[in-house]
Length: 205
Image (cartoon, rainbow, N blue to C red; front, top):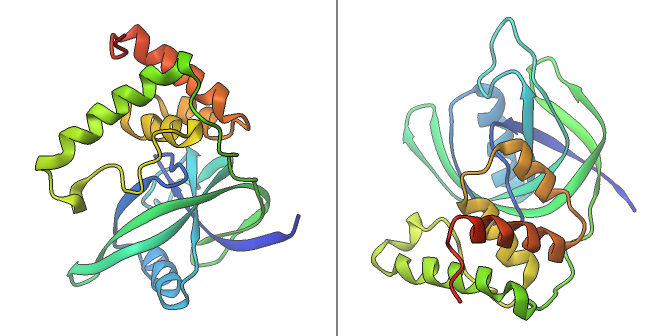
């Protein structure tokens, strides 16, 4: 598989394919990075921090997990001078082969993309997770679409999509979300989410 190089944005969150990620950007390194991504129509990589902070500090250096998700900017605007607000959408997952931090603090990485989840119909024994998500989506009717935590098209018949949306919505620890993100099998990912939902009484027969 071909190696791809792109900038990284280490964050205290996990982005899933087709997930929504709103960001407020004010650091020069990321203003420049996102500006170039918008101008060129190219993505950047979101990775989960293991050490350090989203905002650069003199005493700390970021460390992050060796995999993540590409993010493409869907909408952007300057809400104040030097403050860029963007809405991003998750795309392909990737593994980092090598990374380096440039003098301006921006991380660049050589990566390989992870194959997208195969479309697998939701089996009957896991249908409760899809039905519960359908109820959540139905409740969004009164909310302006730009504030939805899930964006269409809705694929409630697909294991990977349903599992990923529950990963977006549930308040799971980030390390657990990262492990779910990197699972190769979307059915297993949905099984794990189905069990969590069942334990909290969110699955109805």
